[in-house]
Image (cartoon, rainbow, N blue to C red; front, side, top):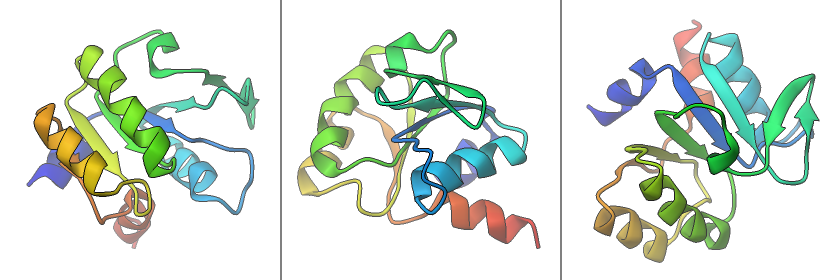
Length: 129
């Protein structure tokens, strides 16, 4: 199952991280860190969130990440897919609301291993029980 494959990977990027504590871009980033994942936040608007360095793009992360968790609107996501493919990243977890038909088709065309309609935050919280 693709979800289990992704959750076994240790290096993650969260695209759309924010310092707004009520937003999923923040909650997902923090939850991945809490669960021991090597997590890189990506958002050109921030230099850091809670003392963690934030990167302006996937290309600026100093190591290759294995999974990209997307927390941005479909228009932004669409442009991100080329960069993901270019960097040789196989896995993309699309949070609800981050994709549309065009994004789904492009991800499939690029051969990305993708997960839709599931939330990594909810998944990790469920595993805490």
